[in-house]
Image (cartoon, rainbow, N blue to C red; front, top):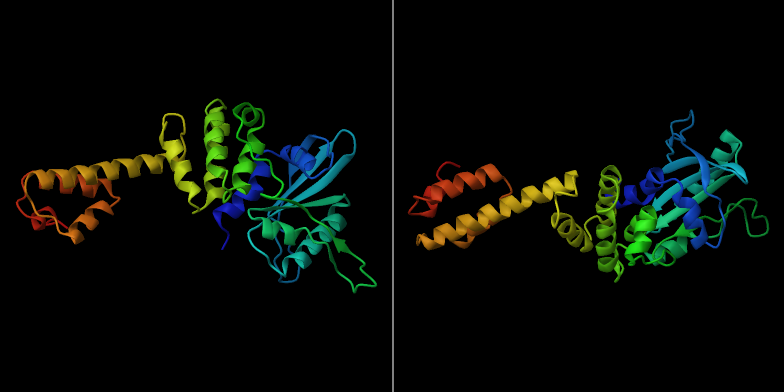
Length: 290
């Protein structure tokens, strides 16, 4: 099953195709900024019943060197089958489109990034034939962007920094900087990048900080996650109000009942319990309508 961090690691390049030219400098390369971009179909399935699908595929047009293809793959862990798949992707795309094809692998841990760099040869040692050498970005080489001006100047790179450093010790500082930078961005762009950041963090501890940063100013972060945070905040507040009311009225609340109230995330149910708590003399009366 494809995870949210996996999607964020490659979709950021769909959102900001020019990001690759800036990332290339981190790799010691100089890839000109594209003057034209086409998002291509990612399905590489042949007529035989074997489905092969690259994560993100872009056709980049540069003024200096013409057009080339960029396949972006998100890799969450070592997978011995991947080098063969990547070799297939690049050779297939080269054959299909007759364009130079680059492969960029995005990772969130250094061990996977080191493994992904290869090189891997398709032939025996004395006859390597086709050698795969992906370009790889991850926490080992992506910049830690904690300067607000730097983040504002390149929001795409700042977002990729947060995604690739999701488990790094610097992630709190990166997220605080990114959150502040997004407040000055156009709303549609801040919406997309805040969502990609949330997806990229997945269920890591840093995701709680990101949710809190977005919750600090929900009037700015208009997104599904911010709406979810708003609802969670209302539910938590109503649960706390219900327990406080019962305590002040002297109604005994066993641990099981307390957990039932605090773990409920349905605001309508919590509001009904609060109303019943106004007159209830026992906890059973609060749950009587359940």
